[in-house]
Structures are given as structure tokens and as C-alpha cells.
Amino acid sequence: MAMSITTLALLVLAPFLVWRFYQRLKAMMMRQRSIVSRHYTGVGVFAAMILVAGSELIARPALLGWLGVGTAAGIAYGIWGLRLTRFENDTCYFTPNARLGMVIAMLFFARVMYIGVEIYANQGSNVPTPGFTDSFITLLALGLTAGYFGTYSAGLIRWRRALKKAVNAA
Image (cartoon, rainbow, N blue to C red; front, side, top):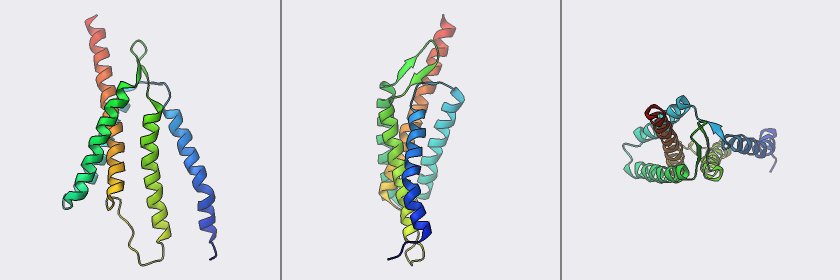
């Protein structure tokens, strides 16, 4: 079985892509300044991810249920992540728990990579291209990711509102 140059390139570049994603993610999980507009954007983007996927699954209640289970687990995980976050009330900086966020993001990234490999492997065959919402595992990963990061963003908005209220009261 001969490998094409494209397959070899993908085999060489995939570990590099995973490493770069991990490094970028690690940098994002450090101490950072709270920017409220980013938190609102996070809530909007992750809510949209769930709503768009959910709208495609209206006719398939079992898969919609898996998306709901993933989202509920992501929300619970996000609440736990907020409890483990270090907040600096005097400077508006926060430090998320790096392990929690990285586990969720890498899980979703791994699932997206798997779908990409599956699409590439099925090229030229009569196997239909898998849809993003066709697998319950993908929907669990999507719900978990969107639920976690959406809840985390909402929690940061709540923290900033409490800070503003405390400053105004003083």
C-alpha cells in the first residue's frame, strides 16, 4: 500500500498542529485581564453554537438529548471551574484553572481532528461524508465545550458586575 504525498504531509503536520494548539491554549489559561466585551462575546458565541446545533437536531430528539446532556455537564463543569478560579478584585485579573479548560478544549479539538481524519480517509470512496451533528460523541463534546466556556464567560460577567456594584457602593 503506497502512501500519497498528502497523507505523508498530514502524518507529519498533525502532531505539529496538536502541539501548536496545546501551546496556544496553555497561554490562554494563564493570568489574564478581564475584558467584559470578551466575556459577552463568549456567552454569545457559545450559546449560538448550542442553538445552531440544536436547530439542526429538532427532528432527531435522541441526538438533541445528547447535546443537552453535554451542555448540562458543561454548565456543571463551568460552575466548578469558576469556583477554582483565582480572582483579583483590585486589578480585574483572573487566573482560570488551567487543567479544566485545557481538558475541555483538547477533547473538542480531538473530536474535530477525528472528524477531519474520517473525512480524509473516506475520500474517493462511496462512504458519505459524516455531518458534524451525526454523532452523539461529537454532540457531547460540543455541548460540553460550549456549556463550559459559555458558563465560564457568564460567571466572569457576574464577577465584574459585583465588582462594579461594590465600587459604586463604596
